[in-house]
Image (tube, rainbow, N blue to C red; front, side, top):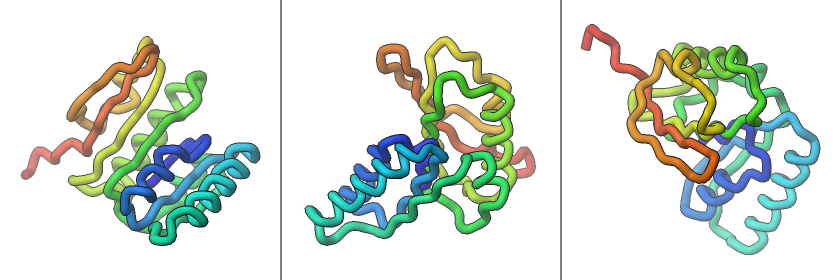
Length: 148
């Protein structure tokens, strides 16, 4: 699982506690990184059999531009509400074109429900959507190529 804009790392931590074998936490904020370190250490001391994880302090866009490590099963994105549409479009374009997402990869995108995200996700298809208060969550996959 790739947890982008990790914040507290709660989704990645939940995944590790439920037998996820590998989580990468990516966030540029010092406080977030410190909190993720604290939370992963706490989880590891309370649960002996957790998967592997990496904590990466880097801007998400910068990380994705140079990341070609693997294809992820799940990519979670919970960016700050005020992030620009251009940055999010670049992030989704990189994910769609870089090979880090496979056909089976599920991308979970959480954002402010009034945000117009059509152009951001134009290379992806919506599998499901949910609402939680002022948040909207989209479950996305790569669009199937027309040649298949």
